[in-house]
Length: 618
Image 1: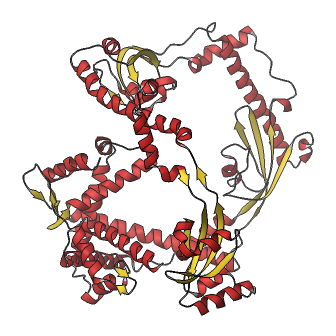
Image 2 (image 1 turned 45 degrees about the vertical axis):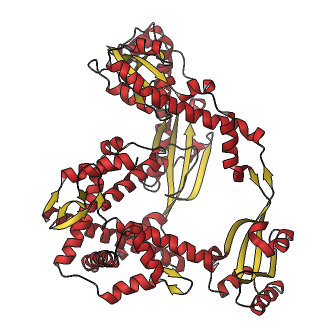
Image 3 (image 1 turned 120 degrees about the vertical axis):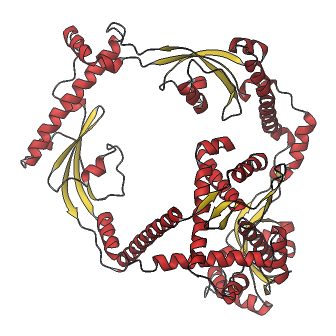
């Protein structure tokens, strides 16, 4: 366990040092004829190129996680991620410059404590100076450079503390939010449908339908459309024709053999003791019911996360394998002698051996390799298609000379079938003009297309005979909503007068103690919002498609702000409010510092970083 912690600590150390190096290292932009250390300055203080690069990388990673797919660097620029990253590193540098200007600094003892006692560079015996030096060397830093970065960060932290230290505790805010969130209401409502009307909605007469259509024809009008010719291809279109080498399938299976052939495993926790006597004492206490495994872990100053081994094989457990694998789920095994000392094991789950043969895995492996090869083929085809289009070939000619499929579509934003299901096509179709030349555009699945606008079809209002069925349905919908609204008004008026007998033949629902954070299935989207905006005894009418809801607030129960649980909730809300105010204050302060700072950005350096980023990061 000590060795595991040592390795984890060293890994974390390398990561943290790598992040610290962001603001310190120079950068050789091979091919630009010089080394770039910064992308500019703020009040004479360099804005680190690497801080900018890493901040931009993080911005892109966040957006990729939101989108669920990679984005190119040009796409990142189109989203403004580069500008946001520059603003972030400029603000950081401005704060460091302001702290230095105000003479804020920390002493050597503080820096020493951060390094020695922080745990980042600790081994089993505490701070490991050799590891510290090695971590710095790997990051290309000297001790002086790293310690200077810590000093600047600490000074900026002192500046923040000085600016926000006087933020008052938001007690009133906490009480107001707690009262708002804790209030509940007693509700009564009925849902009216066509079955609750005295008579069903009839079919319209010709005169009624004609009159309605004269007033509402625009609701059935066809929108402007773009008649587009396109040529496209996706991996799905060619994957069945892609040849996959059998030897490569076997090779991939062998590379992933650990996924397909898994021995029997156990999910266990291991608690190591300094002596056999200590381990036996703990085991006896557990067996007697005087303690349990969690208590034994806590007595050792550890948490369950510290003793969790995850799923292990018999080989991993070594001498402990036989007793552990003979135990049942939930059993405590031991003491067992291990290379790290006597230990108790708790078996949390049994995982049976699993083996998937090559023959069973072959179809999945082939599909994976085939799709990968299909995408590579389309990568190669993109340049050929681009050359054909640049050379003046039409989409029809491109389709005849390649594997692209030709098609046409009358596009408007409501169309979402086939190629229009791809967001990239929809975006391109919405933006295309008659002056645009076709060019290849990639899709999320690796496919590509090119399109051409043939003509713009103006909006058209159809004749009644063309849309008679749709018009009848729309007329009936209007009539139903009107009738339900009238019936709802009758009910609401009766309830306001205290005539609850109006509810006798209706399906009434009651809900007591309803909170703002709850959800009531089957109610309109604005149901709870309206319920908490309506005074006790009052009613509200909520139209909702082919039904209408009549809602009455029966009563209000204020939030209970007494008791230990409420006090803890109030304290947490007050702390959140204080933190939010503190963050706002510091944001305003930072904005004022940046606004008044002397900022110089080297556009050539920014461009060089972007060029390197595009080449090496994406």
